[in-house]
Image (cartoon, rainbow, N blue to C red; front, side, top):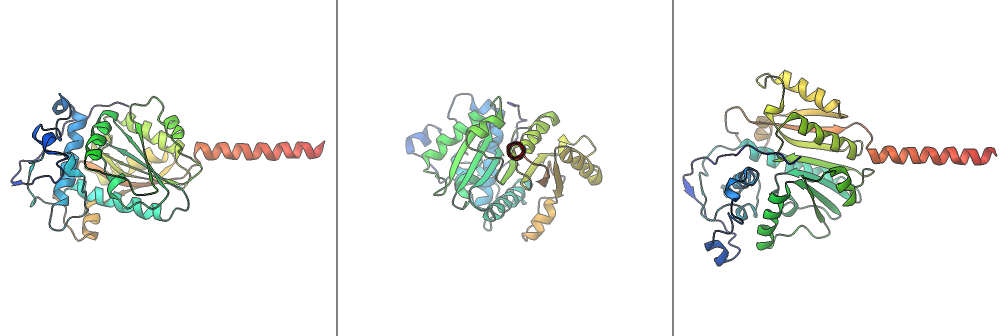
Length: 314
């Protein structure tokens, strides 16, 4: 699943903002914040992740930000020029929506709380969100981007909330399901899955992701986030055809799905989103099937009952 991602270009800037995260003066002078290794500027996965971080950095510095990401500045150049008067980006609307949905959902879970984030490797939610105690956050992302991000986050002292655990699963893993289980994921317990920024270049790759989530997530668990709109095989200009495509794709993997309107989310926040066609599909889905762990537990229970019945009949 080590896929290439199309490079994203930053808009022409008008305002200079200096990042608060300098790590150290020597590192800043050497350009360490932006180019940790030779050739990073040619890595499309890394550059895409930095672009998304710059959008969060820009949103954080607005007069009335949708959210605060105190760590986004660690990923962008120290003298990044941005236009703070730009209209609200769809990416920021989605980020706020996903943030709120994650926190609301885990707050209603008893005991151990499992969160799986499928990201670009620079997702700061494990550090910046106020997770309740006993939350385990699993990050699935490109390993080289994640390791680059970890260096920078450690440099600014970023830490996950107390009594929470943060674990990384490389996207390049040959068996992501097994890797999750080895890290302690339990399909007999509720979980919530979120996808934003994960490099997905083909429909077949996303179907692999759906298959993984379907096999791991307990019945009733949520899977939400953003998908590239071009994944839809139907014309995206028709909302009804896109909804039908989404329904068929998700239901074939055991999920009931609903598309979320960016404009409606923005309106509920008292904001106006940037006009024009957006490049992603915002969605929320619910697992309707039993996870593989649940089915295995059921089989074990049935076997135990049958064995007890055999003993009594002797």
